[in-house]
Amino acid sequence: MTNGTLDGRVALVTGASSGLGRRAAEVLHGAGATVVMAARRMDRLEELAGELETRAIAVACDIRSDDAVEGLFARIDEVGPLEIVVSAAGISDAARAETQSRRDFTDVLEVNLISAFDIATHAARRMLPAGRGSIINIASIFGLVASTPVRAAAYAASKGGLINLTRELAAQWGRKGVRVNAIAPGWFPTEMNEEMFASPNSVDWIKQNTVLGRAGSDGELDGAIRYLASDESSYVTGHVLVIDGGWTIR
Ligand SMILES: NC(=O)c1ccc[n+]([C@@H]2O[C@H](COP(=O)([O-])OP(=O)(O)OC[C@H]3O[C@@H](n4cnc5c(N)ncnc54)[C@H](OP(=O)(O)O)[C@@H]3O)[C@@H](O)[C@H]2O)c1
Image (cartoon, rainbow, N blue to C red):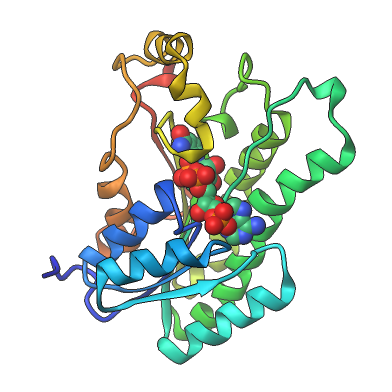
């Protein structure tokens, strides 16, 4: 059963092996799309493909690898014309900036920003000739405000970069029917932040600093994913949709 909004569309979700990417794949699938799911952990992707049963294709892909990304898009081309991308693959750092090496900083930028650029441009080379497409980059509140006391200079820089990359790509591709938007989530419990959510002090800190007094729950990004992926948002591009329980309003 699908709600039909995205019937017949082909979507790519990176980072579909866990957390927000996995959920985005389920949501797009539930709206009728055929979903190509990419990440490094193939066992996780195959498990999800098994649960979804149809219209779900698992592709092992380290998005830092040129060859792997070429292989991913070759597989997508076999499935059908790509119309939707959710770039959810991401990693984080946790260190005092003065102790971080150039290499550590670059590693985070490589996944969160440069690979998101690479995925978007591979997608655009297919979407622009077709004159339609929606690319959704999963940024973060820490692309808008500082992350400290969670010290994550590379993560904050990568997500700030991703937000303005989203605007620039939207500006370059808008006339040709390709929309590019970002979602900036606040705190949602996933593997990325499981240490934070295992610490009562950290959970208290999240609650205290969120206007709605709690972290986000499963499902609270679903509507945004469906909206930005579908024609419901046909006049929306270069937008950053902040879904943070009010974290960034003060
Ligand atoms: N959870 C939050 O509170 C929150 C808030 C704001 C923004 N975000 C953003 O949301 C996105 C998803 O994060 P999450 O919280 O769901 O964390 P997560 O559960 O750790 O998921 C991260 C995903 O990225 C994939 N990934 C990492 N490196 C990759 C690589 N080199 N190639 C391919 N895939 C790679 C991982 O898959 P493999 O390990 O299998 O490759 C995994 O599927 C990230 O961009 C994150 O920055 C999360």
